[in-house]
Image (cartoon, rainbow, N blue to C red; front, side):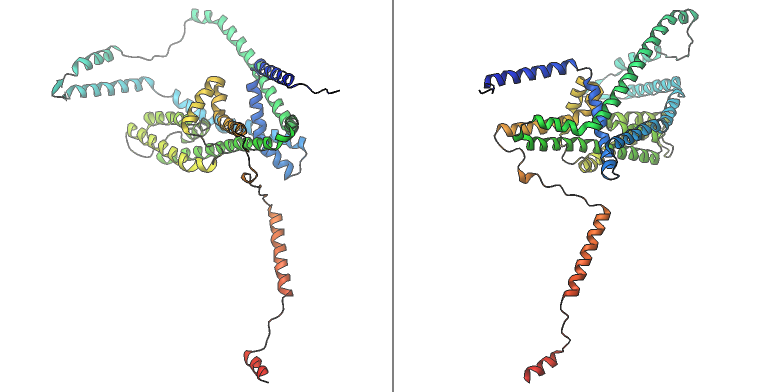
Length: 431
């Protein structure tokens, strides 16, 4: 008795499973960002775990435990490095005389408008009178005399705000508990992924038909290479840009160069938009404080800082990015910029940060599907070069020693050269 399903039944069951899968994804849409973050943590921790297992021969559980302990220590020590510059920046902002800044800005604007009134502007032989435009602006600036005076709320205002304070406190407590539970869930999920990541891969490959397992394995390898190249490149870019901005800002006399370097390095994780956002606080500081090294006006120094940041971007885009990212994440800047906005609209900050590797991964998947539809081999055997195993220094030294021994052995077995001179040989020939 043949128990095999008909082709129509297979199609119906397959469509039903797809619909159920999408419905389950819809139900778990609130948890998917947390699972994604946990997967990223496990993915970033995998090189350390792999090093501990392969080099130091740690068991899987011990390697995962040591790795996450190291990550926890780094996260605990990070505030000791990052908080002091942030506190200095906040103290700097709180210590500014904003009333003086506003007055100086208004005086500068008035002087520029008065200078424009003295100019004689002629267009196509017609003399223009700028007074009709400038005088109303000047009068409005005279009327708008902003005064910033610190004030303390009245007693009735404080009494009326007590109830709202309790509501706010309750909301903060609920948010804090939710944040703690979310953090615990992410950490536990990341640990489980690190412990059983290989099992998940095995389960997935068992579902794939045997005839397609080799191609799917190559596809997964290429996807993993995309994400590894992205994160490795991002960490390298963050360190490089942070150090470069810190060093360059210190040489130029930019106040708070260390904090601005940290800001530039952290914002480097946002493709294309990060460098632009990092330049804004640097230009503001240059306009407010000027240089501690060069005696130039604040405006000129701000222009110098803008040129410096543009130079950093030129060096990054033309020399650093091609070397650290290579061709694994080779996307046009317009595609990356569009992906950042689309990712931010769908998944917020997480979508903006991961838009680049997601687009590169989709490109790999679409390429595979397109070639399969055309009936072509997505990954020919000759296209995949065998991986070169890098020898450790001990193995390399042992191999070099064996080559030397083999060379000496060949020399010892070779026949010794004849000691007879050409004259002796000629005499023997004549006799």
